Image 1 (cartoon, rainbow, N blue to C red):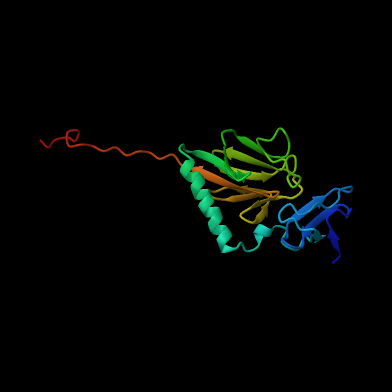
Image 2: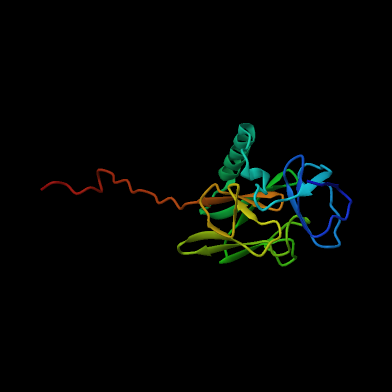
Length: 193
């Protein structure tokens, strides 16, 4: 398979970084950028028959523990019940509460969760809240939407699910409402007759 280096006009299509398997999609007049994930410069054409996302492969255990610890830290900061998207930006945790029926993720200025990044489509994904659950939908993106390492068109989200949009990792957090229990003192309890 012919290798291409960053900066070349390789033509329309999808290319996979040789070093980390990150996938970049190009229009006809685009040149290959350095890999947004690892900075690598070597690409090969991506195949429909191989994994197109590094997170679809086995994730090293230390990275899995780090993500879990980070997500646990985010959870401790959430005081109110609700549904959230959490991600890291410039080394800081960002938490976006899902309050509307539709939440747009993309590069567009109209996006509710916006990433100014060429690996993210203008209209990349939608998070839809309904009475029967929360779903993520691929909104005709070039690089796709991945949930827990699997490329999806739509997927029902559960607490802790990882969404990959371009090179960004977001986590769905569902904090349930806790109902209190009543404690009855001896004074409130009925006395036997």
